[in-house]
Length: 360
Image (cartoon, rainbow, N blue to C red; front, side):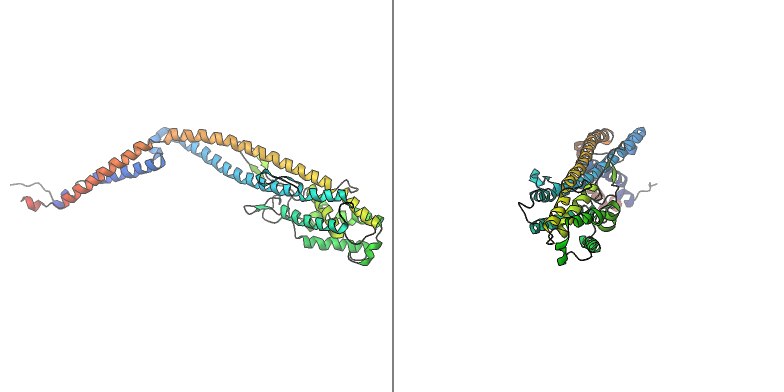
C-alpha cells in the first residue's frame, strides 16, 4: 500500500499564505481608511504618476510660501504696532492710540504756555525710552527694524550715545552741561552748537557709529510661486527715525540746564524746526510715510497669499482626484479583512489541535 506524504506540519500551515495576504490587505486598507489616500500611488496611477509628483511639488511649494508669508505678515504687524506707538494710529482691538512722538510734538508747540523746561525734558526722556523700545521690537527671535541685520538689536545702548553727546557739548563750550556756566550760553552759541557738532552726530555715518546696529537694506521675501517679492521691513537708519531721536535727545540732554531765556528759546525753536528743515513734526511725517510703505507691502503680501489659497484648493482637489479613495469603502474593507483574519486564526487554532495520529 502506497501513502502520499502528508504531515501535521503541512496541515497546521496550510492557511499561512492566505493569512499573510490578508495582513497585507489590512495594512493597505487601514492606511487608506485613515488618510483617504492610496497606500501606494505609484502602483495604481501608472503613467499618471508624473502628474501626481508635479502636483505634489506645486502644493508643497505653495504651502511653504504660505507659511513663510504668515510669519512675514506677523513681523510686519509687529513693525506697524511699534510705529503706531511712536506716531499714533490703531492699536490693539483697533483702539486709537497717541504716539509718544506726536504727544511730545504737541508739548513742544505749547511750550512755554503749557509746560516748563523741566516738564518738557522729562517728557523727552520718557519718549526716548519708548523710542528705543519700539526700535528694538523683535518677532520670532528677529529684530524688526534691523534691516538685514535681524539678529542684533538695531539700537545701541543709549547710555553710550549719551556720553558722546555730553562730550560734544563739553568740547564745544569748554565745560560740562551741568556746570553753572551753562546759564551764560547765548542764543547764538546754542544755535551754533545745535546746527554743528550736535546735528553732525545724527548724520548717516555717525548714526551708525554711535546709535545704530541696523543695516540700510531690508529683507526681501519671495511671496508667490511667480517670484513676486516685497520689502519685508523698515530700517532704523531711515531719516525719520534719526530726526526723531535727534530732537528728543536735544531736549532730553540739554533742555533744562538753566539756560538764559534766549538760549532756551533757541533750543526749543531748533527742536520745532531746524535750519536743515528737520523738526519733530517732519520726523513724524517721515515715519508715517515709512509706515505707509510697509502697509503697501502688507497689502501686496495679503493679496499674494489669497491667490495662493485659491491655487492650493485647486491643487488639493487634483490630489483627491488622483489618489483619493472612498474612506467608507476602505473602512468596510478593514472590517471584512479583520473578520477574515479572525476566522483564519480560529481555524488555525483548531487545526493545530488536530493530529494525523488520530486518523490512523
